[in-house]
Length: 151
Image (cartoon, rainbow, N blue to C red; front, side, top):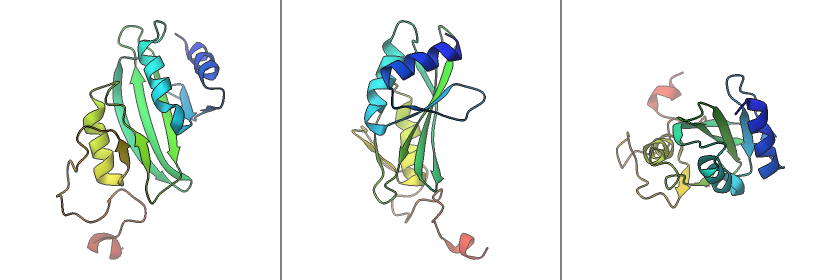
């Protein structure tokens, strides 16, 4: 499926989606409440078969936390980037995609550990890299510790 066909298909499924800025892959900014529906369709639809989540990360931006998903089809060899924006920086919550792609489990734990974004219905949401008693989330722009205070 070519980028234009994928763009048209997602626009049909989610008219309120917005195009992203990625030059490498077609990118779509989705309302968070549509995330699970679209991800399920992309995996199960016979024309897309996006069976592999190869990256899930987050970015702290002025307008909120952007949770970014890179998915691909191992059969059709097409890829896409999907993004949701969480405007609540105090209690950011997004649904887990673990039931769609098992690889999401560790990606989501990493994002939780470093950004403090909660993944609703995650089977084992706990810190992955930092100790349990660590205070704060190091990849947030407002994070302060002894090292960042010296700069």
